[in-house]
Amino acid sequence: MPDSPTVRLAVLVDADNISPSHSAAILAELARYGVPTVKRAYGDWTTQQLTGWKSELGRHAIQPIQQFANTVGKNSTDSALIIDAMDLLYSGNLDAFAIVSSDSDFTRLATRLRESGKTVYGLGRRRTPAALQSAVDKFIFLEVLQEEGAEPTEDEPTDDSVDALPELRPILEGAIRSTAQDDGWSLLGMIGSYLGKAHASFDPRHYGYSRLIQLAKDQDYLEVDHQEGSQPRVRLRPQRTSKKSAAKKTAAKKG
Image 1: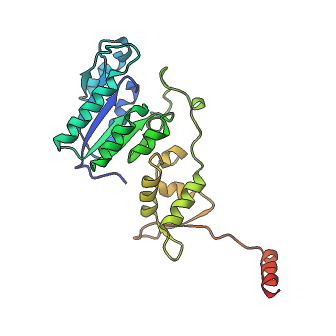
Image 2 (image 1 turned 135 degrees about the vertical axis):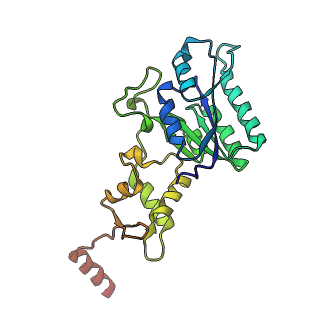
């Protein structure tokens, strides 16, 4: 579940790695989790590569952090972002961090921030290595945030270049079994909390649903009970036993 809007959030963007076409959607998504108090984008702004970002900086009040590429083949932008993140951590004025990058080099930074008790969100493309996806509290795919009908930019891969989404049924069944009460029912809120902790990149939108309850209702192996004035409940649909198999079980017990 999204955090309170009073949460102070630092948004740190690896501009060398992320297309500016996502900037508005990124900030709109993060507004669900807190107030983007610090907004910084890192890169070598003297290069043509970041030209598209320059108009987005002013539009969204994002502070550009200049980092010259002193050595060919070395990404000094990563170092600048990491150093800034640690400075912000020690300032003690922030509750959460959002690392906007598909680069697994930020994996250790994410775990370090979480070790200090900070909530960490990751935003990147679906090809982001699993290590970074698992290192944050929640990972959000930029493809989900992309405006309908928009085409991927040249620096972004198409769906053919990424792994398929994890199979949905084992994820949901595991979450229900782990949170079910004695009667087999599990509160939808508890399922959502479990999924957020066990699968950092899980999001109903990846599977074409805007909300978890809509996704659950559309699965034929689940039952959803949502009475007016009560919290939605979900359970695994009981498997029907045919008369023939029931007779076999009875005969086996008698034998």
